[in-house]
Image (cartoon, rainbow, N blue to C red):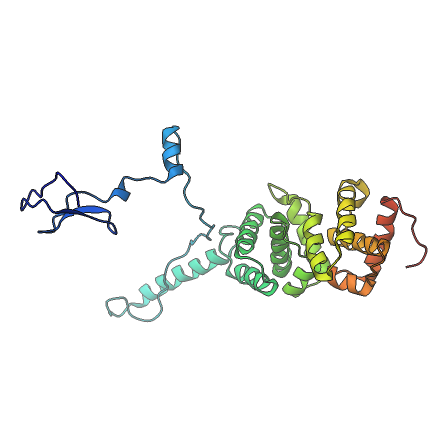
Length: 304
């Protein structure tokens, strides 16, 4: 109940505030006396920005592909009013439809419109159970790569696999090249070559892989003890800063360090199990282990 106010229409003093609509109204005749409060109320960040003379920041909006095609296509012998089209009108509209389809599928003039690439990226993301933000980031990377022409001449599975791998690297998602290649249905070296070309052509190169993200994933799958985890974490920083380790695969480095630390603490992890978890071959694990033993100051073994 609002005190001291009367309705100008009926003169009643029963003025009530609707908490749901946030407005004042007369209880007798229903006349609305004030606008809702939320119309003139800004969020806290908007008020602070306006007080400082700037502009507020709105909610995050995920990037959407641009639609550069007509909303519908004419098909048939009659128009929208049911009148029969002449042969010249049918030829004219058929030519316009052909031009529209050509502009959609031409990557140079309309690189944002590629439904095959969007479907391929969505399939890889769904098969690997990745979050939706990685799908949006992979599509953004694909559009940028098509605009710059850095992946021209490569197959669509290799391009989409490289974009998904680049998105995983940007968001520190621990997925190996072999996993993405298997989801795309191609070989690992095809995705690797496409990713190298993509990384060279992007305006902002993909950041180096974070070894700790791979280690957290492998440690959970192998159920490592706290002692092994502490030893591996102590060696991760040294391995990341060493120049000789820059050319090695990140998941191979982490797998080799886990294998070395497990042997130090007497928790034997077989090469077969370590290679399966890290998605590398036993030969790669053996050679990477020798390199990491030499870099960490341990004597290398002549036999695996």
